[in-house]
Image 1 (cartoon, helix red, strand yellow):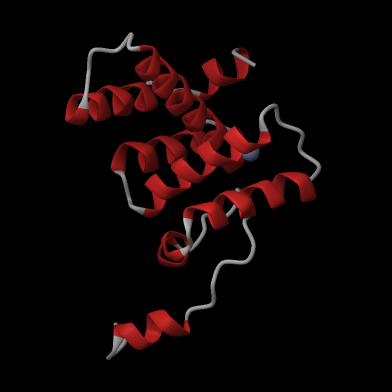
Image 2 (image 1 turned 180 degrees about the vertical axis):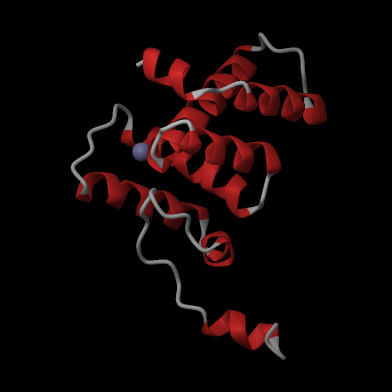
Length: 140
Ligand SMILES: [Zn+2]
């Protein structure tokens, strides 16, 4: 541990590049304003010439998944690690989790889920942990 961790933090270079194959430094990632996180994700996809439907929404869900990983949200961290062991690359694992979150939020907006607050989080975590690489590949 540095003697003065505040000094250490302010010296940390800001994240200027996002690569979904490498987890961003959690502290640097969370220090970015949300719109910068989304911008970096969008820059990665256009730079890598990855075409995704709804680039803005795609980037938003990327950022949400990265936020959960950076915050060490256990179900998300476990699932992304497991999906990679099952053969997905990190980027696809992020997509798989992001899609579950997107669908969950869509259902919540439609009001088809009665859950709210903590129980909604638990329900979402269960859906995330139910992901597996084979189902993800077959669903594409
Ligand atoms: Zn992506």
